[in-house]
Length: 356
Image (tube, rainbow, N blue to C red; front, side, top):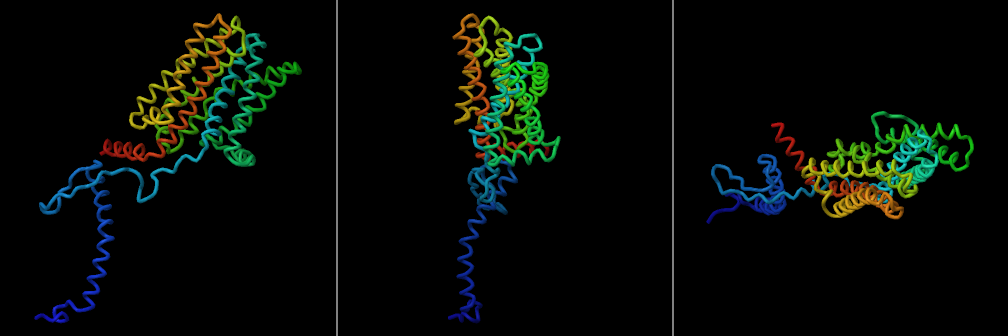
């Protein structure tokens, strides 16, 4: 009969075996996690079999679910509120494009056509600032962004644009309403029209200059989507506020903006491939489909109902609603893409595979 102490299996060793055995329970889970990570790094595939050492039994590697990175999200979620930032995106575009059309009407001697769009621009930019400040939490945070100008920061550029554009739009609207200082009003209208294209589109690089996949990947087309959507909305407001006999300039702008928006946004979603999926799924998909339906219906109605005041006004309202839902759909698509890590991980692996 063997002696445990002479055989090296004394009480202290038995205690060590018990401790090691308990540790093996924990390390088994750790080894499984390490095996999954190693399989992904070596094969680039989420699942499959990996041969054991020296021809041993193959190990089944579970499917990678891309949910977390060591228990933490791959991307931080979008913290902006849809109501605030979605409204900020839409109203800023509507304001800028309305100033462009108002400046065009004024330059052609049609101050009567420009007046409603001046009011629209003032109300829209005011609403845009209110939404932005509400999202920031305190008004002084917006003022703090004006302490320095950074050309490389879309937010800094946008803050200065709003600070310069707002007073011009306000002066143009007030002088149009009161009839006071017409020359100052005309100068303000033209100044707002010059800044209008930047105000209508700067929010596109603002959201694309982030790590959110469905925003960042659309950086090529997003400014054109926002610009055309803004023109469609401003043209739609022109149809709502202008008698049909004088609304042809606004009708052309509305239809041209709507068709351009539909074409460019559809192209963008297809070009983006996997990362474009959120634009067609869930809440973002519902918003996007509704936006396109309203935009198309508004464009068709604007053409067919050009002699009918009611149809023309309803078509304009549909274009405004379609533009608003376009911005909300873009916002929600970004939220959904940030929540699902596959929209970050899969494109990264594809880029690495192409480089190698």
